[in-house]
Length: 252
Length: 381
Image (tube, rainbow over all chains, first blue to last red; front, side, top):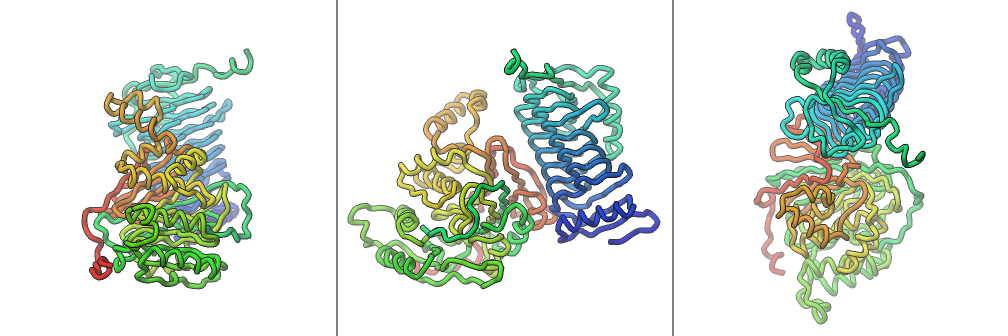
């Protein structure tokens, strides 16, 4: 572990290190009052930053982190300079995860707060079982395309799918199936007929644009993208038709 | 088949499983070091109850002969099986499979290999006239189901499987895979869920040149098993993965279907997807589903399927198991986790996640494996 006195960054070379050891170094560092971490040569270590707390903690990762990055995380920021694997931000409560490459499957599963910003594509089952409550609003933004089951059983929060530089379909099948809360914004129109009967499709209005501007500005800044290009043009909105789509099955 | 003399729990456990594959389309060979590193990175996806590797191009000196790898519980089982082999095969060479005794692999069966060819005047010719491949398949089924304490775990040409109970990196050391070279490798780290962790139950599963490594579970096992039994396949290995190997053997070798069609039978498109296809394609896919409904694999899976001319990696139809692919020059890499690929190849040209049910098919170019010395005297046995 190296400490750069001027910038107060703790540098860790994670090459060949088992995740338990690496996570312990991070947690011990946080316990000792350290705020900034730079971890290089990461490859496949699971559970990085699991359950860590502290809004002013920033962890930068070089390499491909393993599954469950930032699981249960509550406040810190994790920046990944490469691709990342499955289950990013699983049940995350607060903080931010920025992925400069692509993400794997099941991003933000059961996420209940915080933001996940992905520059490239993401896999299947993004934002499933995401939930929100009053000021706890989880947000996921994907720059590229996604696979099937996007927002399945989504109960709250915001997802923005940009489809930048994507020529083919930006999402797979079973889009928003069982969605009963939250909102999904799209920068590109999709063949809505093939999707769930439980959601409505509309153009984003002024109120929606206020929300979009707020998050996309931060997204563009974090990923060095042109905000003007991202925010220009019409956005589309997908929201659930009912907060209780299956009520008739049980209560009629 | 091998008697189950393991002391491990056979209770249901939660699943992981990891898999990796490397292929060089020009058939340039590499040793087992890379794939071992890659599968070792996925250590936590398994639980030490099964690890294994398939390597193609492993036996260039005996390329025209069937290489049988057999596990025996005891000498009696070995004697019985060898009696059968001597009666039916010309055995060019037989020897113990070289192993390194290491502390992490405590207990292992007797491991033997045979390079051989079915006799032209073998007994069964009185009743049948099977082709060599068919006779080898028949022999594997006979030994695995009728010979107590014996199990054939590899029966292809110029390829071999090395597997057992243990973590894959330890299995690699046990078989000294650093000393073996091949143009294609697959590897598996097992976390058995519904069936016991025993030596024969480790992956890859093979028959002739087909090999399978599998992460997932096949909920259609019963249907698949009954279907295969109609074609005289004997399913005796206490695991679901076995069916995939035999289905592919049936579809590709026996029924002459292309690999593309076969993969579309294993992970058939949903009927709602078929309805949207153009008429000729719709007709074809409807026919495949109707004829081969019993060969459809249901349940979550990611598999790597190896054969002597290539490799196929694919997922179930709704992607319930991870799979990542990458290429670098003539190499293609497949793994359960991108980090595993980085372990083999730190800067790939392209990395992608294959879509659900869409196979990644890599074929070798039509060149002979480098360093192959064709021994003519052996061909003309």
